[in-house]
Amino acid sequence: MEKKRIYMSSPTMHGEEQAFVQEAFDTNWVAPLGPNVNAFEREIAEYTGCGHAAALDSGTAAIHLALKLLGVKQGDVVFVSDLTFSASCNPILYENATPVFIDAEPDTWNMSPEALKRAYEKYPNPKALICVHLYGTPAKLKEIMELCDAHGTPMIEDAAESLSSTYQGKHTGTFGRYGIYSFNGNKIITTSGGGMLVSADEEATKRATFLATQARDPARHYQHSQIGYNYRMSNVTAGIGRGQLLHLEEHKAKKKAIYEQYKQAFADIPEIQMNPMNPEGDANNWLSCMTISEGCDVTPDQVMDALDEKCNAETRPIWKPMHMQPVFAEYDFWPHYTDRKSVGEDIFARGLCLPSDIKNTQVDMEDIIRTVKGLF
Ligand SMILES: *Cc1c(COP(=O)(O)O)cnc(C)c1O
Image (cartoon, rainbow, N blue to C red):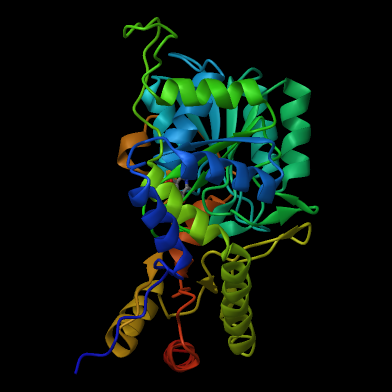
């Protein structure tokens, strides 16, 4: 019999999700609006303390609308984390604006305040800055926000991977002018697909909802003065989200336990380092990642192949930095160091994401750990 697949991060359902979905069917709210949508927005706002929320059909849509709300348009410069998933920066291009990629720093793998400072010397007036909390680890928000404030740059927090992570006791996603969360299938909680735009500014989230529902002016007939989008979350998927939210803290505790188990198990292998934590924050440990010391002859590919072949376990390379992507090659990039390889490129070359699924059993975990250690 084929060994069961061990996933990197797959959906974990509990039962309440189906009850909320059933309610949507029973009341015939099978539409991109309804009581689950409103309740899910309220519940996320209460949980994170963000103020107000607009439920959308993806995290990418939330980033796009945040840029629209800030008036980002053709020719505007937008600073964005370089070590991330392409969804962080694609919406900049939807608006024909110009991304400028800011390297990671080695302490949290997030946007480097040093690189950002140098980017500001060339571009003193970017229209916005998109800061990612990679793999759930909070960025150096204090340093980044000081620079943003000094230049009057509004920050969008891409907290797609970091829902439930906190920085100095406050939820990631609630520091910027706008924050965004994702409920894609692999995230810490899921609606199968979905996202949320959050803000302290209620007018802004109302405007986001307006834009997300085809920008229909208040009139009996269909009247439009602006271009709109079909970005609203469905009442069915919002039901899944409400059920999942009841288990978010439990998911976080399990993700943390997985990270701690890897960290302890690899403590006696000097060639293995776990992804760093920010001492100012409390991460959700969405994905546990490792890097291999420079000069060690074991490669990330060998670790990934061994886990696939011996444990039937899914892994993934670290996100390939945006400045190394063919589609973004023409855009400016600001490295953390001025005299060596960029931090993002280095982490990409030496790192990988370990299986971090909260349904991993102790047997799975021990199997993975034994296989990795066997290579060193
Ligand atoms: C998943 C993700 C997104 C996009 O979210 P979707 O809901 O999949 O559109 C954006 N940024 C980062 C960093 C992500 O990991």
